[in-house]
Structure formats: structure tokens, C-alpha cells
Image (spheres, rainbow, N blue to C red):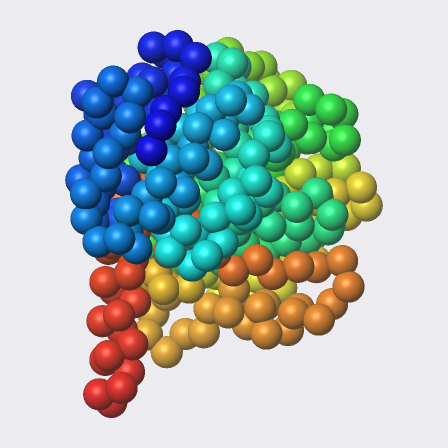
Length: 319
């Protein structure tokens, strides 16, 4: 296929450093690619070559519209092409969720992520369920920061169950902050990347940003707040009900979790699983279920998620 990119920067963006992007495309669609002057030549099965040409055409279109190209987007474009849905890539182009303090755009990379973001914008409570690497927590953090910047809420409240310690943290060394820090560290990391350490510290000092274990939510009413409950698969039904009834006026809530990674004691039902059953048809609440297709971390994470899903499905058949 003929390439007519406007600059060397565009070629570099398409092919990636050391042709990294083309290597991903070759692997995903089982073709080999070679550039001769302005002609990109694919070798492989005829159907795969046709798919590769369509994917490259879509990537070029994305570049011209100011979109970034990276391996995760190429893998997703290839997956959509195999399903005959490549044109749906248009739906995730141009919608910027947030901009980090370093100026980097945070955008949805999959249709599942777009549905997740749309749900948060449209509903007071969203339950986002899916495997590791689908961006559940990171996108939730980004939307919380945007809501704070836009003065839609007065504060951000982030919480997680400290399930490994059974919510009883007294035996751990240090003060309370040091006791709960290991459980909340992933939330801190996401906040630092989005808003920067100085902005984070200012919000904490003003009391407009709170990061606390779930046990600290009991007895409170959280109004005019953006509330995120992370790792919710590790709540008990009692904890989940307690948390959901903290929601006050003017607040928005996101509950995230991965029901394939429940760390509760054997035989104990997950509060997230029960909430999905109880709340599925309640107006103002939406459940978004992300899948392995929405994994945007390292490609191995997607393969690991699929391998475990296949293994667990086979184990279920053997019972």
C-alpha cells in the first residue's frame, strides 16, 4: 500500500521507535512488513494482508487527527479489524478524559473504557468490574480530579478495603498512616501521576482530598464529593452496603473491582458480586463490565488474563 505521510515525524509515530509499532502489527495479524520508499509491503495470507492494510489506513487517519499511536492501540485496532469492527475506532478518538500536570492527555483506548467514562458522566453511581490492566482505577482518578478542577464537587474521597489485615490494623508497626499506607499506595501513585505531588499535598492539607481504608467510612455521610471505592471485590456484603449508604447529596461514586481476584476467606461472598446482583436494574446506577480486550497494560497482562480465564473455565467443566 502507498504511504503519503507529511513528515518524518509522522513516519516515526506510525512505525514507532525501532519499528516497534510495526512489530506489534506483524505479530497481531501474522504478516511481515517492509517499507520501500513510500510503499509499505505486507507478506502473509491474503486475508491477513487485507486486515493489515485496513489497520494501517486507520492508524494514519488517527495520526492526521492528532491521535497518539502506541502498541496497545495497535493491538486493539487489530482485534477490532478481525471482528469487522475497525470503523468503531472512530468512537474513541478525540475524547480527552483529563490532562495530567505534565500536559499528557488521558484518553480512552478501548470501547469498553469509553462506555465506562460515559457511565460516570451520566450516572451518580457506576460499578466498573474487570480484570487487571483495564484502567478502572486510573480513569476513575482522572475523572475525580477533573470534577474537582471544574468545581463539580468539593472534595475527593478514595478508599479501599484492607482485607489482608482483616480491617484490624493494630498489630502493624507505626502510626495509623503508616499502617494503612501499603493498602492505599496504588491510589497515591495514580494521583501523583495525574496531579503531581505538590497539588496532591495542597489538597490533603486543605482537607479536600482524603485517602482512607474502608473501615473509616462507617457512620459518615459523604456529600458534594467524588467517591472511589477501589478493590471492591474484597468487601463483604455488609461493608458494601455500609459504603453505598454513605452517599450524600451532590456526590458521585465509582466502585471498581475484579471479581476474578477475590481475597476474602473461602466461603465468604464478595460484596461487589452481591451489589451487581442487587443493583443491576436500579435507575441512576450502571454496571460496566470490562474484559480482556480492554487491557491496556503490557501485552503480557492481556495474555495472562485470558490464560487464567481459560484455565478457570476448564476447571469449572471438570468439577
